Image (cartoon, rainbow, N blue to C red; front, side, top):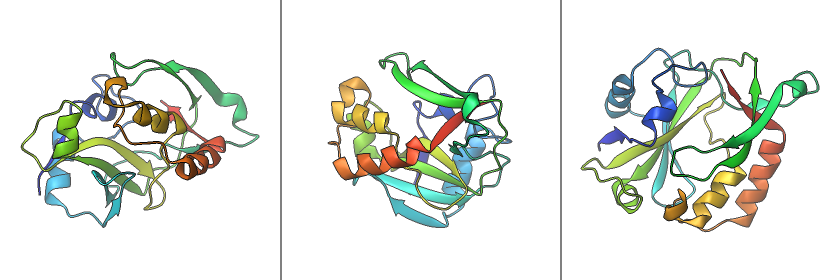
Length: 185
């Protein structure tokens, strides 16, 4: 099995200007090589048949991305409109600033199949492509953000995957993300 780092994921995980809330201590090429050479601790099913999650013990100093919202840190929450790429419409997001989360125990690579990547405009000979990565304390999936589920349901032309909205998964996501937020470094 071969894995590539997609052009979609590369600038988000390894930006030109390094940020504290992205993957630390390694290059994009080293990350890709690790995923191809080191077997994952486990493989989880993703939100659709074309999506798999490869769970690796964190070999970097990358920090957990989702942080619990508490009375002590609520004043550090920010919000604004962001787009993941220049072609996507901005959506309302929220995040923490000026916090120092713990180092993640796991890096969970989010992989899409070659066939799904082709539907979304990425042609590759690799079997799988990394479209994102979760940095977590537990070896389990962080629920997809509600807005990402909605974007996916809108279809490929709006930056999604074309997967229909699952109402129960959406409710679980809202419950999770109502009590947590990502952070920016």
